[in-house]
Structures are given as structure tokens and as C-alpha cells.
Image (cartoon, rainbow, N blue to C red):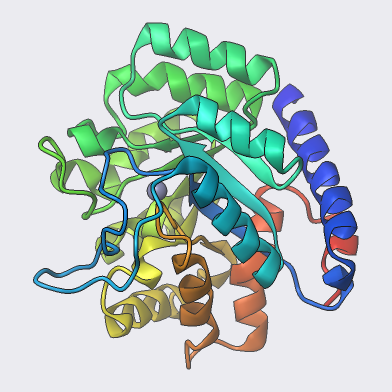
Length: 312
Ligand SMILES: [Zn+2]
């Protein structure tokens, strides 16, 4: 409950800050970006092209590695596209705090979790109880080969459920080339144990578990509390592959539980590209696009009473 109140406060500040920041606010439909980062979990040189799959391929971005510059460019893109709120995480927790302080109300501050350890959890609890973090994740332990049902993560889920926090998890077949990354540890079926044990957990899954289509749909049909984002797959894989995947979820009747994210990492130019990918999807109605860009996240985050922030 405490978590929910804090989150509501963040949202209210967001509306306030945004309407002060840009008088055009009431003319453009708002967007919520459910997947933003203050950087990468591993270092890359400045100018590094953006990720792409399948390799060999050529990414078209240029990495902005200085955290302050990245924040500036990210906020510029947010203003340009009327992104009123971003779910922001980073491995460097102090960077998340810095961004949040620089742009009050624009971010749901959240820790990126690469390793689950009890000392780490204690620190995290303090940050959350003090209100400095209002979300949990991205939980990225899969990048180190640790699946969502690993016992080390159990206390994290328990805590998040108790505090009613929105939680983002990386459970999918692809990810950065890290030495212990495991595709097998990303099967959405591995979420089942967690969802059964924590029925009130407000969990959303990166990239709708790409490319584990059948497994993800099974989980979403069986566990109606589960949401997903479409983030990195809007720009990291071929556009046709993204459309095939997204369309399958919409045709399966799950269009109300898919949320937009950019997963911009160190490529802020991807924020706009991710938006364009959804805007140009030929099979989506305008209403379905608005659901993905805003309404589904608003419902997931429980902002739906705040009609005033969507002038549509
Ligand atoms: Zn991410």
C-alpha cells in the first residue's frame, strides 16, 4: 500500500512537472515509456552502433555514454514525443537517483538487479522504504544465467508483492552477449512458479518474452495479472519479425496488456524509432495504438483515474 501511495505521488508530480514544462501538453496524446535505462549493464565505447539481431548486421545508432548527456538527450526525446512518464532503471543506482532528481516526476525510479544477494536486498529495501525507488527491476539475473524461479529471487518477489511495486523482468530468449547469459533461463514458463506463489505481484515481462510466443501466451492466458512490454524488439530485430510477433499477441486477444517501451540504453535516438515502429504497424487500429502507448500502462500502474493526463 505504501508503495502504491508513493507511486501515485510520483505520477501526480509528473503531471504537474509536465504541464509546467510544456504548454503544448494538452494537444498531444501522452505516452508512457515502460522501459528506460540510465545506461548499459556493461561498458561500450562512445559512438558504438546500436545493437541489432541477427548478426551480421549494422545498428544505426551512436552510443551516448556520458550519463549527463544521455539524460539530456533522453529528456529531449521524452519532451518531443510527449512521454510523460518513464519506468527507469540502471545498474548504477546513484545515476537513477540523479536522473530522477533532475527531472522530478518524470520517472518511476527503479533498481536494475543483475545479482540477487541478501545484503543487496537489504540495501534495496532501504531505498524503497525511503521512497527513493518506487519500482523494482529490471530484474536481469537471466543475463548471468539465473532464471526467475531461482530461490535467490524469491525474497525480492515477496517484498515487491508486499509493497505492491511494479516489477519488470528480463525473461526472454535474447539479451546482451554476456558470458553467462542463458536463453534457456528465459523461458516464460519459468515465471509460473513465481506467479502461483505471488498472485498479487504486479509483474511485466520485457519484449513479451520474445521469441517464446507460445509460452508467453500460455502464461498471459493463465495469469491475467501478467503484462508485457514491447521495447527492444521494436528496433533490434527486423521490423517484419517484430510485426509478426506483436500481431500474434493482438490476434490472441492480448492487446490490452501490451505496453510501449523504448529500452533506449545508450541510444536515445531509439526512443523515437520505437514509437514509429508502433505507429506504422499496419494491423493496429488507432485505439490499439493508444492502448499500447498509454492506456495499458496507466491501468497497470493504476493511473486510470487520472483522465486529465490523457486529453484524447
Ligand atoms: Zn532493459
